Length: 455
Image (cartoon, rainbow, N blue to C red; front, top):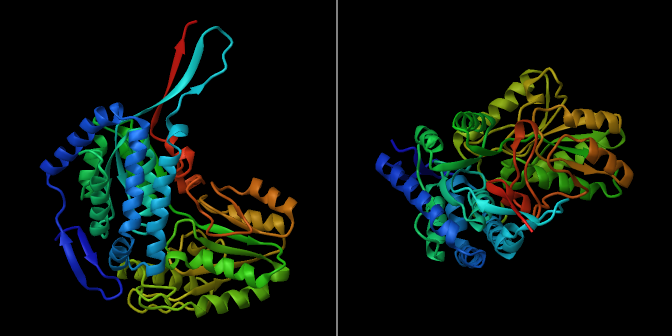
């Protein structure tokens, strides 16, 4: 049986199967990527690469409906979210075209001696990207676009449940005019991926996925002295200490939890609420979570489509059941229907429970009552993860204090779902290493070469 299959999570129907790459195909892809990095990657100008990236963005927009419908059937994304993801992938790609001079330009250094010194950014070469299923286009764009802007070349192993969207992306890069080997979709097994990482022609690897996947990739990369970037899980806190509009704050909390049917690494997952707001917040939050429409992901009225697979839904249900068995209170939801799972609210989760430290990858919110700022920060930081965080308060000085104290790669104050191409994305602790998006992304796989010239 092929590892690469399209299984519609809404129906459970297997729609298509695709073979994994043969050994000869893997060797050909590595050789082409290496050759392109040594040729096109070093000889092309920034302006030429920017023009190609702009064409990629244009083709995303031209094909947005087709691209969106592919991921609805592959991983159950709600159609409006799928269309928005295609648009965001286009925006990210265009961002790196627009900022190509900042990415590739020399950076002069102030020196004590005579002469000059600059840092010149040069490509490393061929890279492997291992991408997840939850954002099939966005994840690829934020890895591929900055690296192609620099002149690196890309081998892309997409999630096994996303073979058709992966092929569609590869077609866009080819149709945009990128040369052979600059970008290739390769359906690798995990063992083949390990062999690719070890290959001397591959200069680095980026993975977005689970802690387990990240640890496995990092171990192999470390053994072969390869640069690695990791974007892994998250259990992001949403801290509410004061508000002048509780209804708007609750809506922000629900939006931050239910985006992509709750299957987002940087979704708000733990809601840490001041005692004087707790009861009202819980009542309104529960009502809004349970009101979220579950149904056909192709319907614009649907808020929660199916989870990405039956296995994912079963795993989430088992986590919730285990939490309740350990003493947590199931306030609402918690009843699985195939791959569909409703908006669910848990309270009374304590540090003794597995649920206190687990990531719920689906529409489950855990609500905590706290006495004030110090306890809120303590609970927010009491996790192995450190990806994103959200702070809602009317006190600007308090917001600044908390932003400094939170152990996370990103802090959003009084807003959610505010990602944009210019903002770097990444975390600390077990949420990974490195940054994607923004200008920092273009520094991950680059040779920052010092050039010192005598007077």
